[in-house]
Image (cartoon, rainbow, N blue to C red; front, side):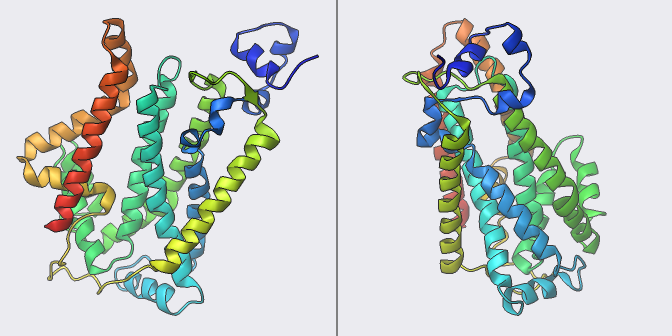
Length: 348
């Protein structure tokens, strides 16, 4: 008689035969899960899925009232915030969800990095997850810009200028995003199209692809995790409970910190706070403190190293480097540096 998790053990052990050959892709998705996925640090990857669902639902509601034109954008956001029934709440849930999604994706990346869960055969999982992070950041920035108050206008100006500083591709990207040399109504329309059309489809496809890759390649082995539990209903119900708790948290945050709206965009009056959103704050300060080429190339090099890090880890491990210790030191240094840069930006 088989016991719960037997099939998962057989599949992970590479067992072959008629039963294994007949399994479809859905069997791999629904196969039993390792015990360690019940531990809270390993639920960080599922939380962004809930937040993405909230983003899609609230974003659709907001498009019913938002008008993507320089003459009507601010007015429509003001109407959503102050006149439409529960409009402020929907906008607040949307804004809070994207902030938390970026935050939890970062937490998930840190956990994977520290546990080295990207090791073979997990390289593709890490690369696909890295792209998910970058597209999520782009979603956050484009949505932030659509408010079109003075702070978001100048924040949009700062971020697009940062993009324009990139070597070789910077100037073409700057013109592509702005529709010219300066931020204008064309810029707003292009960011709206990115935020409501291209990026959501791209992010949704990447998230689905990342989940399929994780399920098909399997989960990294964790010391102390020997047993398995069923994907349904046990794991599904646990993730549902976490999702419900997350929704309650978001509702509380929106009630305590309702979305604000500053004065309308004014190209002739620089906002008192021209800093970009918090998730670009560290990069902004890095560029402000260092010479332009040094800052840009170091950020590009860091992003490239971030994507290919599993292969760097494999090469260094083969040479006897203690990668567990190195990763802990690197993660601590990067997090402390980012926090320090964000605090510096907040005080300037």
